[in-house]
Image 1 (cartoon, rainbow, N blue to C red):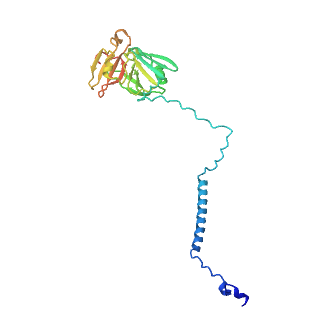
Image 2: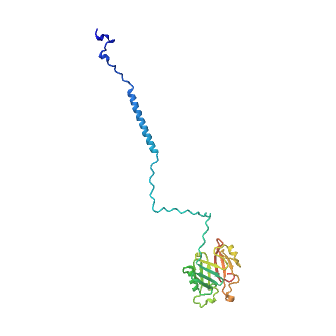
Image 3: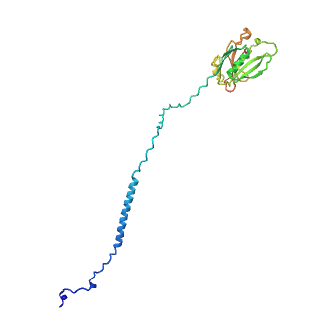
Length: 271
């Protein structure tokens, strides 16, 4: 018996002695891919989280603007405004630069150059010069013919004011023979720079009732529908004592029954 006979087992065939081949697990590749995908997903989540955290952090503040050498002026505190009235009061008319005060004996003109007084029998030249200063303009000139009962007159016309000066012509008559060598009429249209007053306080534009309240001694209805109020009783006595003191004749218009004119002149009773 050979030495090998005692071996409890016979030697294996070399071919038979190789280890059997291991079969490959069919799930290995998907598992590897799944692991790789998981790692990538985790990486993406980390990157996104970091980005979101940075995006929500406040950005670095911009540097403050440099201070100017001079500080900007501060607005002044507003002052409280007075409450406005519900209705704006009408403005006061400007004070007249010149005044003409009428009375029974004549009139007085006051301007910046001084005071001038005219009586009805005086020459008209100085009165025209004084009135020209008062109105600031030379008058327009007009003329009215006389008749058997009325004298002819030159008329000097300013806005709202007329001065009548007797025209004697070549008849050889003197001014002393004329009851009214000069006389005046006031109407509407006076400039604001000129104020004309009278001793009775009646004004053009007053109502008839206002004029009546000033105490006329006579009221007369004219044929044209106007009303005439006469102030200054006992005047117009030229023929009895030579004194020229005129009454004031206040006439209305026929539309609004207001004072349209104020005339100082000589009129015989009933004229």
